[in-house]
Image 1 (cartoon, rainbow, N blue to C red):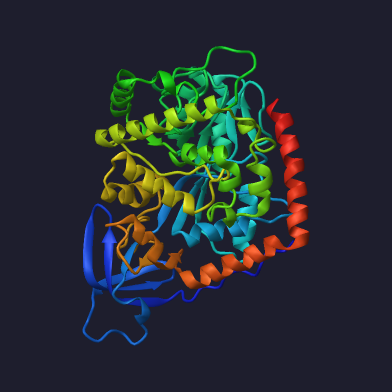
Image 2: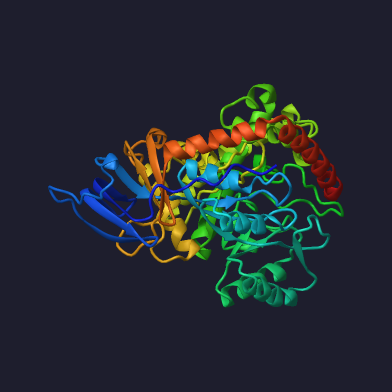
Length: 466
């Protein structure tokens, strides 16, 4: 079950000569030379007529942009399948050099990521939120429960000591609990992101970085058994223009950021044509356990089992209205981030962020603004100085393209190299390593064992959900 050996970097100290450097929303400079050393961009100067003989000339004439950030991702758990290094690699394969991990079900994914990094497997920077913070019944093992609002302060303090970057608000929280979580997160210099709890509205909860546009639709009716089926699309049929204007107003007034994850509904609709969708190139990036087990419409993730024509119609309505609201929120000038909710049906690491960028563009957000959201704006939220920019002293996380993707997203397909934490990897080498993983996953032992383990995990998940 051991994964392939780690991909090795081509260089850690190098110079690029005669490249165009693009800082989205800020600057564009042609014919530049850029030097990387010690994981940092050492200097940027106008290219001389005769470049340093150590310059990587095969990248001359290309376009250099900051690495992308996925602001709502989920890494796989630590188990015998050892999928983590592959998820990290797929992110790099699509230019994603930072991810905000929004939690997992059993609390093992960050340990697996740290172990993979220790063992030399390359990947993006990971900013982890840690366990879900909830109230009421424990839905998942990786949950911290608040019994009273006063519990918020010690919970946040411990998560800070444990090295987490953000707090993930989840289900069951009361308004006083959310208010205390917000106060405690501010006190300890952490970000509060997450769900709007099911019995609160967007304007009541005021989650500083709201995920999935939750709370825009009317809160669920009070029930002793929470309805966890399709929670991200519930109630959007009643969201009209007046409601959207109210959301835009409160967003501006309260300074709320949003991570809409538009790709969630787009990919969820692929369950309607499951037999065709499971053979799509992006679905086949992941091992068969996802296509044939986790994403199966009848026996897969419990929340999506047995979806009806009416369910798919609700998803379409929610998707269309969320696209409309994203454009309106963009026009407020308040932060929007790009996130994917990786591992939900047909959402694969890395490529799903490209899909999210295209959906933002389809919603009417200008391409220059999308690039800024995916790089420097996201980096400011993540809190690493100069991350998401290409300038002297900045962390060396950037992408090299043959064509300019800041002018046309189709040029994302012309990625030639990825520099992650100062290490340069050619796209050809990354693709070769991806192909090596896919052969590994298609081997009879891994394939059969992984499918069996996935089915067992789903049985446990279904039991937990009840």
